[in-house]
Image 1 (cartoon, one colour):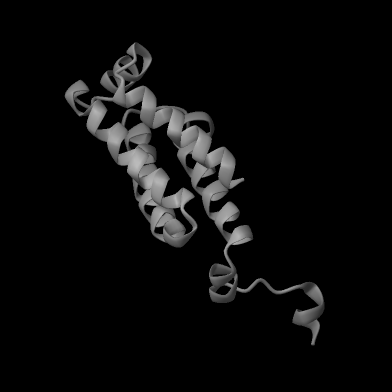
Image 2 (cartoon, rainbow, N blue to C red):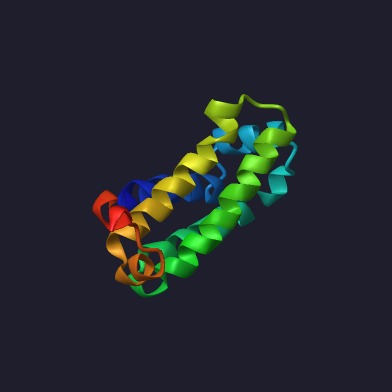
Length: 121
């Protein structure tokens, strides 16, 4: 799960940094100045790098959550469809935290999940 998140966010960041036309046009349609596209790309690449490095993965997940929350808010502001556009960022965030939960013992200790047999006891 984490690998999917990293690959998608790397793609998103690189496309923005090199100013590919689809990234520029899509950002302009959302009402974000196109001059900010490379900066957004750098931000997402830094957040993704922090997420991919085990020692800083929790910080990276927190920063990616903020970035993705902003993406969802912008999609909602322009009135895009809920399940395909607005919640897409939420889906990526769920994958990011799910992947981190599976690979990070400290997070599982902080947020233990209970099994059905534990709840009956």
